[in-house]
Image: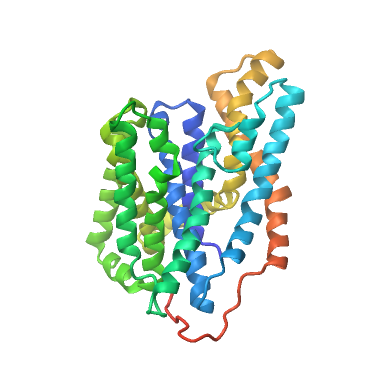
Length: 375
């Protein structure tokens, strides 16, 4: 069952990235990239949640089942995206990207070797995470004597990964010629944000009382909200584009901690608005959640809109439009085409996946976990 609040967060992350890539707003130009970090924390939480739920149902994890189901989600929509945009580039725009660029995209190494589309670098990070996380969790199960909770070392593992990523980022920007693109895009520098989502997912699924008791006092919720906003504000006061070694090393840590704080608030804070305001925000939230359902395909297709739209109007149609009109067309077009492609490709494939590889049913196994998910 989908979580409406998490779909809202998806939409918020998507909108900030789309506005960031439009260059229409100086504020979002400085800060909109943090939408990717919010996506990373959400992915860590949700993907680990799938694996934790499978373990609680069956007492085992299947890497094959997980990777096949994830592949049905990621690969068809992405490879068809590459095919259609490639045909458009070749036959309509008469531009000819190198085959090696397509190969980097196809192999999901575009965050180390640039592919055809720059915005897809985040898919490379997530793909590597999809491979590493289940292998890591399966190893924990195999070597743990605690069958009820074999993931108890996850808080320490998350701390180690966080320190390693800070170290990798420091090496990239402080040793030799600084590489600020690497610290932003490469997996070994960015895995910590995803694993912070995994840490939150672990507590949510296996130690829910810890989160519930911590978030029950109103003062704690206020402190999390203020602290998270403060951490995320570093993206404005120390913009990534200024090539600050300090921010490139530790700043990304502040950002994903802030995103994680807002994720916790979305999960646990309810019923604090007056009735009229709650009705209005509920309707607006439903709209955002509906859009968030299609975030993957919209994210894919907003890239071509950002690249092609100015040239379409100025060079092909010989029409001059203002920046605001161009942005509105770009914004609505990205959502319209993304939702359409999601309905035509992504979700029919997912329905096929669920028929061929359904989610695992609970089975009676020794040491089966019976922990409340804390919902």
